[in-house]
Amino acid sequence: MIYLDNHATTRLDPRVLDAMLPWLTDRYGNAGSVTHELGLESRAAVDAARDTFAAAIGAVAREIVFTSGATESANLAILGTAARRGEEARGHVVTLVTEHHAVLDPIEHLERRGTAVTRLPVEPQRGPGVPGRVAPEAVAAALRPDTFLVSVLFANNEIGTLQDMAAIAEVVHAHGAALHVDCAQALGRTPVDVDALGADLASFSAHKFHGPKGTGALYVRRRGRAVRVEPLVFGGGQERGMRSGTLDVPGIVGLAEAARLARAGLGDEVPRMRRLRDRLWTALVAAVPTVALNGPPLDRDGADGVPIRLVNNLNVRVAGVDGQSLLASLSADGVALSSGSACSAEHPRPSHVLTALGLDADDVRACLRFGLSRFTTEAEIDTAVDRVAAAVSRLRAM
Image 1: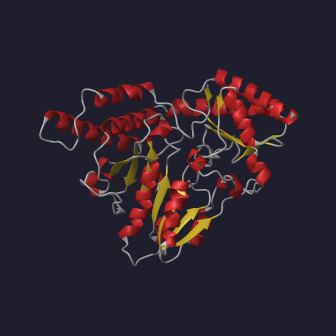
Image 2: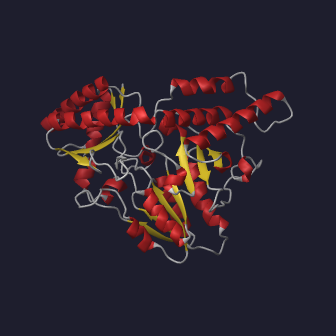
Image 3: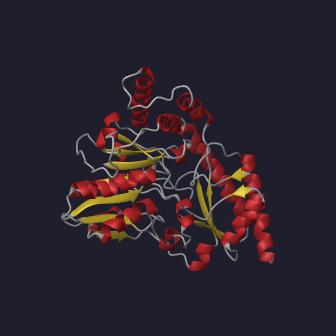
């Protein structure tokens, strides 16, 4: 199988597995059991992992809350911030129409309970701006006196758009609101520093950067403009009361090691994945007539020299071909791809991200998403292009 669905999940790095194994076998103590050696060594492992993960994102240890993944982290950030205001303080929240459902759904929940919500449009595919981006001026214009939270996806999981978070943070903080940044897709693919991003809250999932599934983290700023969230899960008071439950020591150790590797390898992996992604696009253009790009251009960098699109992301549409039929054919041929977010597969519907770019229903149905990783090779790229071209030819002939 040629696996090119790395926005959905990534392969566990063998180095991460090695770090986790002792905590899955011999060192099995509960980190909350501080009356004996097994528990104490697990607690020490969690403390060390908190330090390591914090360093990987430019934070400090006391700002890290371990969770089950970015979905729980985003829910805690959004619902916990709202709950902190009290039952009567409904207020106003701003987000983007292209957010992941881990953000859109809890915000919709708040809306049903009386919170006002503004969902900002993004730049269209066929426009003068960067497709998928929101202008900081648009965020500023949406802010109201009662706006208490703005939530923005840093790196889009379908089209790879990277938002100008520093500029957005500037207008949000000038207004006095808090900023939640969904960083699920970013770590290991672009620089992630919570201070540089201006994040007050940031959510992460280990399995997006070669760590284990079921483990994640929420960054909660405690320095300077400190923020507070109310817990959603109650019980033993773990994670300073913000997330009760027995700590997943192997998962937390794996999360930290995966984050450390992601940051350490950034200088090598970003240019390598960009070259592979560009090779993929060039070959597709040559092999598949009428293929078109969704999302930002591949060759454009921001003023800081950082690409404006995730270097491992390619989203294309193939005119005249049904995307689901193409995916099924490619799966039979041993190529793993998707048409969008894996989280939306439980309730299939047209991609809200591609629709927000202004694509019509036929275009949306004809899209494929490629996601590369540190394990993707040139040979896999070349073989995948051959198989995509062959599958398109078969379907068009039918």
